[in-house]
Image 1 (cartoon, rainbow, N blue to C red):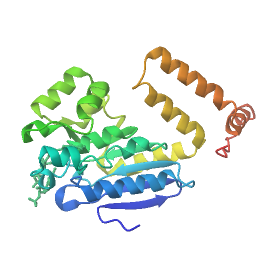
Image 2 (image 1 turned 180 degrees about the horizontal axis):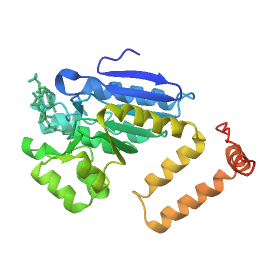
Image 3 (image 1 turned 45 degrees about the vertical axis):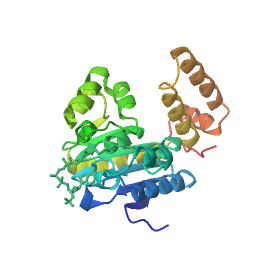
Image 4 (image 1 turned 90 degrees about the vertical axis):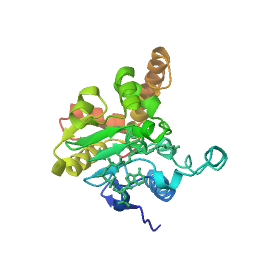
Length: 258
Ligand code: CO8
């Protein structure tokens, strides 16, 4: 499939998606979101791919939903028309890990997209924010829900109500991002993390993703129960036998994704 607003590259077992609307700081219009959804689905169903990285440019991961495209929408357009909801949740259906490699602005829908990824690696120049309040609206792709879970109610309120941006150092302190690296190291670091994940057993990787995500949706006792079932299920895989045998034989494991 031909893409115009994203670039899709396959690097060994990693799918790299680069958001690419440079003139609009990667503002997330319908076309970009459709292309992103298609690319994510195709990587998820590609057996050769074991991890996905989404990145943007040095200046912007994404400066939010496309304000010019949605400025004149009516309530009925947004409610009935599905214009700006289509594909926003596709990323949540992806079963393989998705890493956001964020440089520059991750604002509004851009911050929300990054938070929908499994973890965020940020460049030192990254800036996160939910400035929708300045536009007379509010976050619409999970910002008011994922930010409090990621960084506490107090900081989430502060960001959503004042529209202030959080720099990379604060985002790391607050737990929004897992690592901060110099800008020139960002892609290398994200691809190295993706390659490490891609060297593991894919079914176990998927179980871990499913189990960590369950922590957001359920009680502690239900989550622990769910985790234990998956732990038990892992003993039905060849890769668990291989992983433990390799440890005991003091060699590297060779996983077959079985
Ligand atoms: N939408 C459309 N175009 C944009 C956007 C955007 N979000 N952000 C930047 N652009 C465009 C600018 O209009 C400009 O275009 P042009 O050159 O044609 O005038 C170009 O990108 C460069 O931008 P600036 O000149 O403004 O660059 P600066 O370096 O001066 O400023 C900023 C960079 C601070 C990032 C600034 O562009 C800005 O504030 N952008 C808007 C940020 C914002 O408010 N984001 C939130 C958008 S609303 C949202 O995301 C809601 C999500 C809901 C999802 C719902 C799904 C269900």
